Image 1: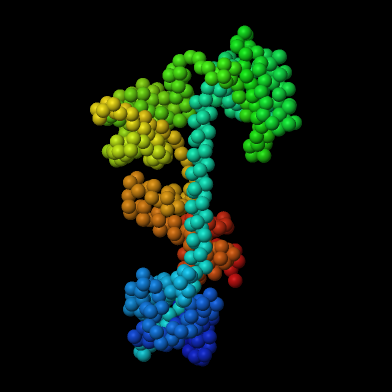
Image 2: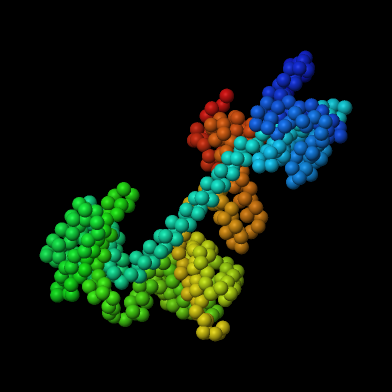
Length: 482
C-alpha cells in the first residue's frame, strides 16, 4: 500500500512540531519551497549533506544549488508535485562547495502543502551508492583488462606450444604422468608418442634412456634448476636431447619437458618446412579457413568442420564463409572492408551457425594476402569463446560492462540493447543497496524507492539473495527486516 487507509483517525491531532520532526528524521534532506521555487526552510539529517553548505540555501532558488545538467529537472519536479501524494522520484545533482569534490546526487519526491503554494521536497542522499557504483565499474574494468592480458598470454602460449619443432610435454612431478603434449611429440617419439597423455613419461623410452631421464628429474626436484640429458632413441632412432625445468600449476609441481634432436638445437633443420607447417595447421585445435577474394572457402582444417558440425571438410569447400559465419551480408562486409583497409583483423566477436544446434559465440582473427584486387586471399582463425555472464532471469545473458555492451552493436537490435543496458544499471543499483544495508531488504527497498514486493520480484529476476523459501507465491520475509 502506498498510503495509510484512514489517516484522519490517528494523524489529525498530530502536532505540527511532531510532523516537522518526523519529516526531518525520515528524510536525509527536507526542503520547503515557496511558490516561486525559493528555499524557505530546510532540515538535514545526513551529515554528508552538511558539507554542501545547505545552511546557505535559504533565500536562494533551488535551481541555483544544482549542477547545470540537472537544472532543467527542477521545473519538471515542481510542476508534477501533486497535493494528494508525493510525485515520482527525480535525481538532482547538487554542486559541492569544493571544486575538487564531485557533485552529490540526491533523489527527491515533491508534494504540495496546501493552498499557499508551498512544496515539500523529501530527499535521499545517493552519494554512497554513486561512489560504490564507481568502484564497481572500476573493478569491472580492471577485471576486463586482466582477462584480456591473460587471454592474450594463453593465445601466445598455445601458438608456440602447437607450432614449435621441439616436443614439449607437461608432466606431473608427483606421478610423472604426462598431462599435455604438443603435436611434435609424435614426430620425435614415433609410436611411443601415440596416446602419450595419461601415461608415465619414463614408459615412453627404453630402459637405459628412462633411467637417465628419471635421474635428471630427481636432480631437478632437489636442485630446482633446469637440466638436460642426451639419450638413445628407440629401435635405432637417432639420439634425443631431453631437457626439463620445474614450475608450479595450481600449487602442484610440474615438469616442462623438451625433447629435440641435437642437430636441431645446433640450428640445423630437416624435412619439408612447408609440409610440416601445413600438418600443424591441419591438427590445430582452433578452426582455420582460407578463402578467395569473394570469401568462398578454398581450404579449411578439421577443427572448422567440428565447429560447423560438418561431416567432412569437403562440405565447406567452394561455399561462402557467411553460410556459417555471422549475419549474412553484415559481418562479412565489415570484415572485408577492414581487411582491405588495414590488412588484418584481430579479436572480432561474432556468431557461428553450425549445421546442427544453436549458434555459438566465436572470436575471429583474419589476414589478407594480396596479389592484386582480384587475386586477394584471406585467412581466418576462428576460436569458440565462452564468457561467463549473469542471466537476467528470462534466459537472456546479461552483459556486465560497457565494453561487452558495445560489442553487441550490430548483432543485437537497438531496442534490445537499450533494455540490456537498463538491466545492467538496475542490477548494479540493487546490489549496491543490499551491500549498503547489509542485506536488509526492507531498508534496501526504501533506499531504492521500491515497495518490498517490487524488490523481491527484481531479486528473483536477477537471481540475487536467497529466495529459495518463496514457494507459495507470496513475498518471502526479508533476511534482516527491522
